[in-house]
Amino acid sequence: MNISMSNHQNGYLSTPALLCGMLIVGTFGTIIGADYFESSVNAYFFPKAEYEEYMELIKKINPTIYARMKKGEAQIGIPLLKGARNISGTVHTSEATRGYPTIYIKSLKNYAEQDKINLLTTPIDDYRDKEIVPAITKQEQKLVMDTIKFLAPDLYRAIVEIDFTGRHHVKRDFDFSGASVIASELDGLPIMLVDPDETKLPLKEFRFSIAHELGHYVLQHSGVMQHATEFSAIHPVLAQQGKSEEFTPGKKVSGQLPFAESFHFAYTRVQEYEADRFAVMELGIPIDDAIASAQSELQEVGEHELENPHKETFKETHPLWKARIEQLESLRREVELNKAQSKLIDWRALAAEYMQEYSKKTKVIQ
Ligand SMILES: [Zn+2]
Image (tube, rainbow, N blue to C red):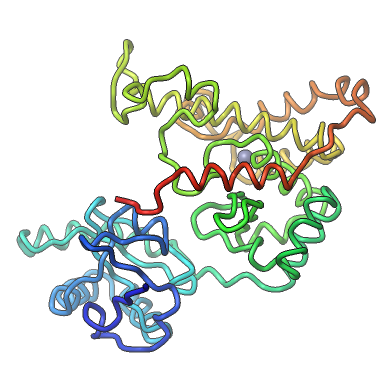
């Protein structure tokens, strides 16, 4: 049974529109399902008076942002300022707000006026850089589906069999730039997430990007399973070896590095190389296309402007593009030797495996 929060907690902005992107409240007030971000920060609607007080402060601090938020709220009927118990302040965009960014802050009830203003300033500054993310279009969905058809016809067939247009397997990415992939909780097949710029890439670069994401899916990399614990040894072999206490966030090891975080980043960087390699070796992306793609990303992120590039990557989930290009170059000979040896990928079996993993997990997020 779904219980909408619209009636009691959200009555001060009453538009039926908010029934989509519904939140479900569990017995103890925990938010279940809906938006994963919202459950991870423990989001809730402020009581009317509190909401109005903060909005007045926002108006004082930055009337332009206030006006933008008010305009958005009038459009969608959902407050664009919400409470969050697990963070001090941030801005997040989701499907539930139809692409409008929302400010999330901790309750400021016990603070003095000046402190309230100070605490609101950071999220307001963040808000300035956030644009409304347009909903995904049918053309974008078709482009992604056509690309999947080109790269992996078997996967394409498995998707269209249950989702004729692919609209449930190609969605807008509100959290990350570029493309990403998750396994559907309904059928285990990949769901491709793309940001609005991604689909504007030259076709060859776009193909590499989708092939790379499919690599993450096939290789069962971290982040493909939805709602997985962030810092965990997701690789089956590592999961057997590592005891869970070693992956406690913030736990220091010799050298004073937080173990779980450092390990996690190092591991995801390896996964990026693996996904690049997969795109070339298994899905037949020409190395020169992959390199061209990496070159333009390198320009885009201004990698050459970094003063200490390797140090700066240490806490990143992704390796430097320069290093990724070096790996791609090194694959040339391997591609020659392995031609016509590409393994058949059993997409349906992979989907079944993901579904089995999901069935092991409890559905309630505490
Ligand atoms: Zn990747």
